[in-house]
Image 1 (cartoon, helix red, strand yellow):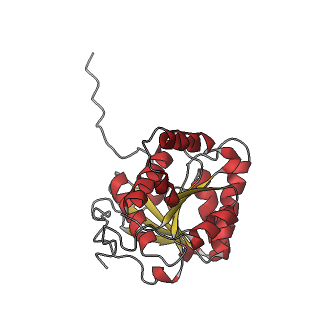
Image 2 (tube, rainbow, N blue to C red):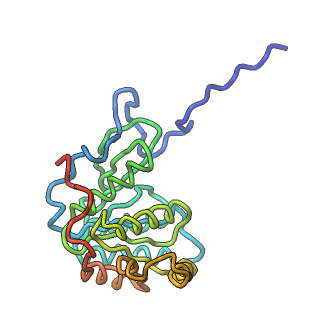
Image 3 (cartoon, rainbow, N blue to C red):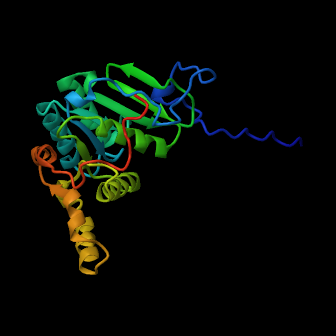
Length: 247
């Protein structure tokens, strides 16, 4: 019996993902350097709020309802949403609802991909920016927020390891003065209570300075989220990074 041919390994899924359809992977490119990517003009006229959250809807309706309520609060504050760009789960709930209320110009998704694709794709669901890896994605998210107007900042809704990675890194950067906006835990159903208990424990064991907690808070409602960001006073006047390079 003749040996079977080995299947060629590919990082690209066999089935095209929604943002890959009809794209020419041989000639298109993705963003590889977040500091040379030219941001949309006029971001400083609105709050730019980056939402970290899961691609799962979670258990029960409370999480999806909270995501839609957050979108409504963003709409009321004329905010621009920056998020992970996925169409499902809580990501999809907050982005689709905001598009319904504020239109596609209010939504910017930053999507990591192993396949090719245009650097920017504008559709009736907002702008999608394709990047080559997770690190570029996070840095480009930060650049958008730092270019925003008063009330800009970061929000963590319930999610898994990816959300925690984004949340912890962003909070650490705010603590060190790399960014001068605040971070809010949207504490739906007490989701982040265990994390807050760990923070309290870290403070009590002298591993964390309580002064550092000024960059982070918990909010029980969507309105509290945007209100806290609007009132946030940065710990540092100037950041240690020039986030506006490339424009």
